[in-house]
Length: 486
Image (cartoon, rainbow, N blue to C red; front, side, top):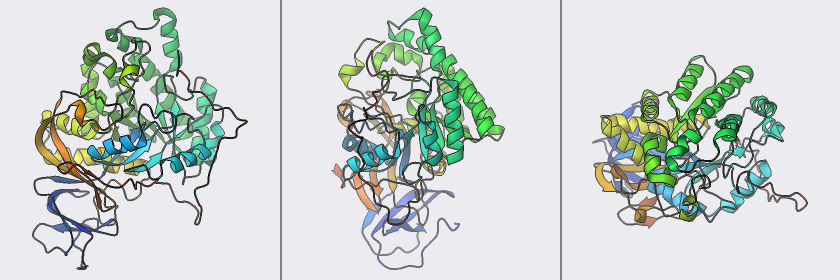
């Protein structure tokens, strides 16, 4: 074992000993135990070596993963709590083995500056079961903000290149997007992008109009919009050197472009979502609004290429794009139903099930999952102490029973919306226990839940800086969400 995984010489009692599991460490998978003190991993002990005294958590027959990171969730706070609350969303995260989330800015009001992010953090304090960081929203009217974004508030910013029901603001003009790339490069901010081109969609809409059925939805929002957008982004990254992460890549062509750009040495990476790995456009034709998404679910060949990217290491992260809507909202006509589905609870087990179904050995699947929801997002977004089962890391652990077979039903759904696109699926693997900061915060068998003590994870803040109270001036109108009504 290297310095990240070793036996500690400290024999003092532990706060917790997670005993006898298959540990997924940076060195690979090994039998052993994890010793926790003061909220951190104090030692990783090989099987058969002596263990200190302290409370025991039996991990026999289970993988012990670092607490997983979902770097793409919409917990709908503030302003859209009829769809989801932070309490419900963070409970769903724990049930999916996730102990850290990164929340998106398309709320009411949208999080377009430091003041609204600080206010959001205050609103969530005492309500979150998981640790969290925020992506700030990139504002096409004020791209210069990105050059001076304080890292203790956010280290990344989300830019929408196409509009939909909950997109707060959209970069419609080329000069706005170029200004944002330039400012983000100056400020060292990573841009995360919804990369579909609104002008392509507007052009197509001028002839075809809105879809009248769900089998017409994917052609209504075709791959051409994403391919054009990704090509534009690659050129901007080449020009400015901006750190860039493309979200929810949906097609084979986008994947090939991004892989080629990264091979050129450009600082560009991409995410694949669980639902683009799980479903195809045939499912949307059958399931209708439950898999009406943006970007759209595409063809089987696209799903195959995305799986190749996930298993080869080409994809940097997988995310849920957890975006709940009420059943009533989703049951509107095809042109009006909002895109999105809940997914933070289902993400890891759906990907685990998909890997085993594709013949991936369980140890290899555990390593893949830990890279895509552990070291990948932790390194990309500078989440210190997260995503690794190593000495000194935060004692966030997720215990996975790798072989249990179970069927998801609506009764399992922790999200406020109460439904899942995966209802009726037979999953392989289930999280049984989750530890955050050295404390058991979720237990499947006992049905127990810890306290909502999740922390806001900022970058390095100046010493003594307190979280200020921030309010939108009464004289400044709140910007409405673009596309919220038709």
